[in-house]
Amino acid sequence: NREQYVHFDSDVGVYVGDTPRGEYQAKHWNSDQNFMEVRRAEVDTVCRHNYKVSTPFLVNRRVPPSVSISLAPSSSQPGPGRLLCSVMDFYPAPVQVRWLQDGQELPEHVVATDVVPNGDWTYQVLVM
Image 1: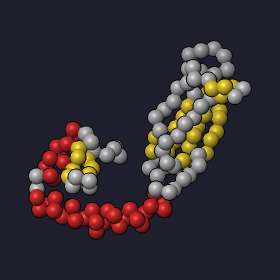
Image 2: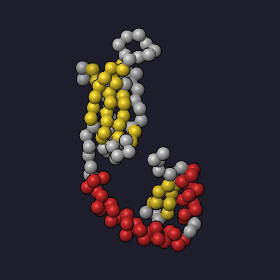
Image 3: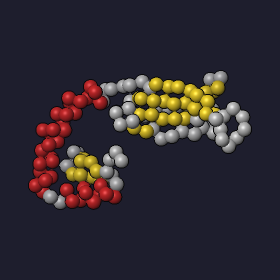
């Protein structure tokens, strides 16, 4: 499901669970001293090296969104429907989408999906 469930906290040198399953796994790994010795060494030999190599691609990477606005018919209300703003293929994930009318924000009745990963290091969100 592409959700992180456990991570290694290099500041303290142990695994930390992000979910109940991750907490179980972290406890198991943290109790194995030989396993943990290797993982702590890998922070320098693998993680820091990979961070240095991938920084230009991941940390400094910016991909502007592709934005389109369309009319979505309303099945529950008579009338023309609602405007749908599709914000696609952007990176990094944090994004703000607002509806404006005559330069003023329209926060009422705005519905948005969560920001969804596309699986290719880009994201999308829909706002009505």
